[in-house]
Image (cartoon, rainbow, N blue to C red; front, side, top):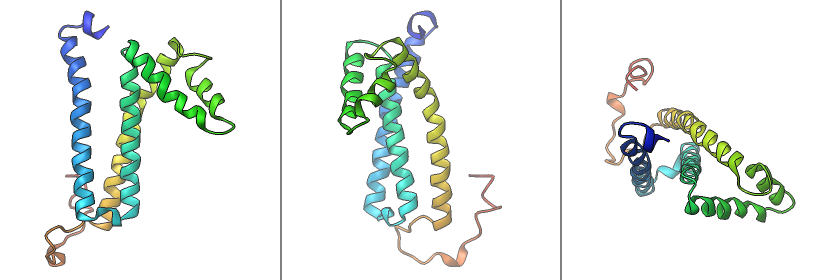
Length: 161
């Protein structure tokens, strides 16, 4: 719809699709920086970051299915069928996700809804990630003692952050 009926809709759609690739590039750079500086030592902050990564990957997968071409259909079929490997509940889970016994329009509606809602979950996880980062203090890659000039985050920087 957006590509045909909206002025410059093709541009908006391509910006959205390619912006996701840029976003993942930034995430991977952030992860590499965290691995290099040992940020994984702060377990809660690191685990929330992993949850952000997984939620972002799920959102990207849901967006990949939305154009509803052959690649999208078979991508959705293959990835969702991976869940059928879960013992006892796998096939029921796949049927529930599909909304029937095969991928159809109700599947597309569900994927669109979740593709819209998951960024809000990612935003909440990001706020939690930043909260944990401010609680523990970010790591110090320079290695100098900077305790002498510290001020409390709240209330001085809460509004700025």
